[in-house]
Image 1 (cartoon, chains in turn orange, green):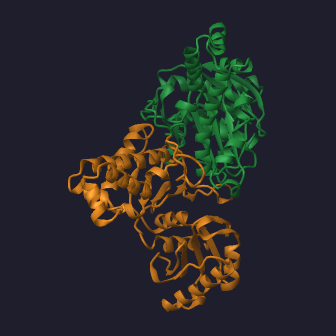
Image 2 (spheres, chains in turn red, yellow):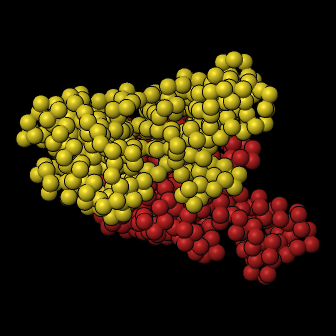
Image 3 (cartoon, each protein chain N blue to C red):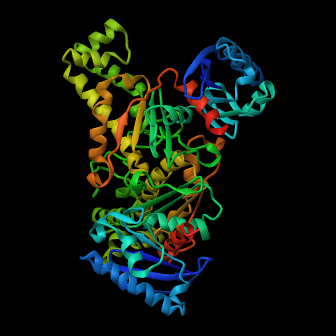
Length: 312
Length: 312
């Protein structure tokens, strides 16, 4: 029995996970930002409470894994901007409170680990996961091992420059992929279309329903040709980054996650487009595209997998 | 004692390499294209001749490594366009002729392996090599291991899309990095400047010396401001791709090779520019940039390293 902890900017979720990746119980708390000692103490309490919830004796928990939205190296959080954590000795402190082996990693890496051990990428030697959200998270398994980089500071794959439009990214660079392929970009494009065609279907839907990720899909379904054009361009921008990654990593499988992965309109065309454009064409092995098996629980299961993998 | 073979489109080079990466003797032949059985038989002869040249008993050769300009998986050349080899069981055939353990890999990967074992990347856990030439070759070592990808079809890192100018690449995509950061691009830019400013210094030098990679550097040395602008833009395009790779891999070191690596004007600014633009700024570990230790012999030494590494 393991614990998986998923730390987010809004909440901390914890789950008891068995050896087969099944969640027996889960609980969450609101994330307290500020003094990290206090936050870690609250997480320790959450761990005991979640075990209790699952009717599991805390002694039967073998190890604890945590996914952190930031850079984590050997249990030490180098930086996690959303938590305002810089140089936090996370696992050392949690271990001192719980007296169990604790492991921590980047949350996107954990999620791929979960899919690799129990989910959509089971049996793959080389696979990639991207999570499309406000930004784009990336994780890479090459030859059966998570890519980390020096001091685990790699895999910031949303931040590859793919255009030259002079659009500034939060990271300081210009024209990073996530500026064009994130759901934030799709919202921006929806807003721009509504403004450009104030009498169009998209504008009407945005006015009636409020701006959301669904407007543009609804507009297309109702026959808005401009919405189709916007969606096609958005898909091509997703493809651009993914083909870059195929040429570098040549994965067997790409897992595309995030809320938008529920939209077949986005997911369905990816595999054909990527294979058509990837280096070497049919001389090189086919790359398949799929969505994650674990959605809302990916963070908990992935974090537990870190404990399972490292605890032997 | 090992043999390292470097197969190119023009010639095949072979060297006897000792356990410390020192070349004892080398020989080369003109590459015969056509029937691959014939080419491999000639390579086998070259192996025996090179051992003789070094006064080494052929029985004392422990293993043989070969670098191939193409995709090589488990000794099998899936495709090497310049050799017109598609599905060639290379090591099997060479082994049957020489009765020694034979290994083969992509030439760019071999070159990085050589630098990693004996050269500029010794002791690095995460490092990258790019070779700037007609195109851009890339190789990646992550956590002490060469990245290969599914069926060794990865690491085509010259083919990441970084712009949107509609320039078609030989690989079929548009706007691949190597179209902007290769020496071919620098030649094109030189030619374009000479055409745009027919009375300028660059045009004068191109007319007198003939178009070469040196013209633009000479023009700048003689005070051509336009040449400076062209070189600065070219460097920025090299930086664009390298920062992408830093954000993905976070290497300790990047080795920039190819003929142009002799030009300090290109190499000197890279490290500062890359670190200034890379994700996380000073929160993330510094990346150093260096040139290879092995130049003309990189292919032979790298190929021998494949034999050294795989033979135990």
